[in-house]
Image 1: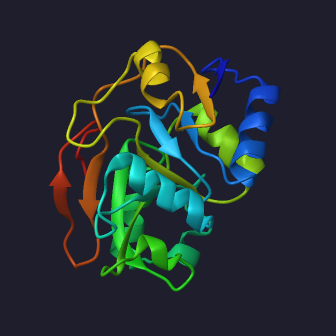
Image 2: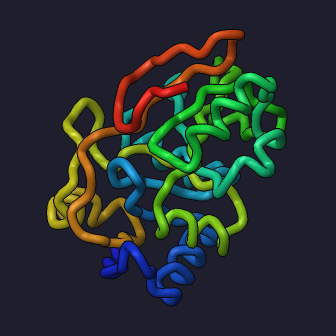
Length: 201
């Protein structure tokens, strides 16, 4: 795994470009978000997504979320009602994961026995720069083993993922509080997990 020290406020373009290359080649990248460090790949690369499932020890029936730069093209990936869109617009970018009904564009590997998808618009400069150059959604799951605490120590992340991820965009110590998960598939929003971020909607 290649480890690149990356400035959180002004990410080095060469680091972002290297991450883009890795993602396009079907590789896995560890990157900081506005919550915890994420482990990600190209949403549309089936082999890479399946590798993340194996690393996380996750049953394919469990939800893998992905990050987008904004809500501009959200209708491509999910069915969004007007009330749901207003909530998302109010809370993004920010530390929230929204559960929505998936469109047919979402790869089947993410929808095993399920019709919903998790979508995030993170408030993080490294994420945003990477999403802009990659120009596709990126899988976002916490960079930690299943059923363990979130890891914010870069050294621990290196030790754990040395032989599993291809690139680590290291911006120093990360967070330990996950995103707040909000189910927007029904008429009224439902909080599935309280995490970082105020619930003022």
